[in-house]
Length: 484
Image (cartoon, helix red, strand yellow):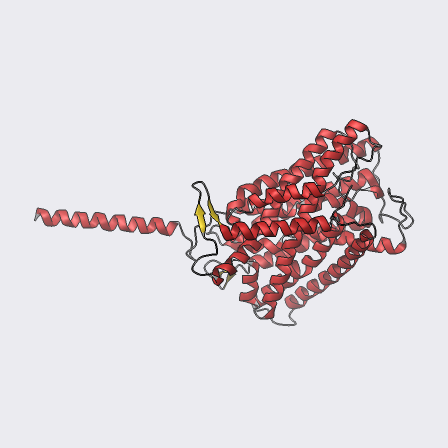
């Protein structure tokens, strides 16, 4: 009798321990069997801010100078409203079916496939990943310009502001590329949260420096520079060029592209949303993160852009901290430009991790028994030969292309124009219509299509202006010999 009781107690203990172990295992995975997601509204907001408050903020003073005090800030607020609205549409498409328990779409392309399907999936993939490649190139250019600015700032301090202090960007692009080779070995998006938070802090740092220097310049001038309509026809730039009617048009259109690029992050929104824990539903958390991020970035953009224009008027440089509207205090400029470089290291990873994941998923399907080269456990890190090789090649390609096309403002404008309409407006609108089964010619359908058409026209105009700017720069361009 005692033996039977003891056996029952042992069986009960084993059953309890087994149940507890199963529960613990269940707690470590999500409803799709993948590792438990830990993201919160604040990590999502930091990812967005890292992606949004990038080098684009530094070109906003120039953009407002082209558009003027009336149109410039108005366009910025309109872009902010469009981004917030379409991001919420896109967030609703993360799950197919029930917003809390439906099947997850892990990437932007997955969401397009689930809601639209057909040829649109391939078109979306081409645009999205080419845009991510373009962002990597643009950030490499921007980082090299900031590193050159540190060198030139110290040169001006030592030799005086009249010395040209020329510097080449090639060495700095290679240095940035080497750093990215190492950071690109971070396995996936979920593991770059710490780098994203650091980058977000850096973005606030250099934006605050630009804002403070602009305010100091306005105080010194004792007036707000600029005009209601921006740079006028006949204006003579610092380089001695006269703004013609055609150039006025191109400049205005390029400014639209710059502002569009400054707000673009929809291409990685689904990937960011896939890092969020639930409950609550991921779409609900993402809407909060989007609201926080758009408000914060809009305030910073308006302050930095408007203060830069108020300080320099129509002479506002294309890059507020590297165009040398400011020369002093040189140490503060060095701090701000180093913050830009650190931020761009993180932003590069935030944008490229979805592209890395896409290629590696395709490779895993191609080689289901293991990727070529295998994995090596070095004790403190596990190295995949395939990941090391392909990601290193990717960084090398973006670095070489950046050395070939060192036109910061024009590249920024083209990226903004090409990515804004299809990825930020068209696909989110079409997916939302399909997801919610909105019927044609209803008020909601007409309103969404009108928004999409208006944004298409803006994108086309911005693309034309930016391409015209590149063609103008190519007249004095020599490959691999970019100096400032």
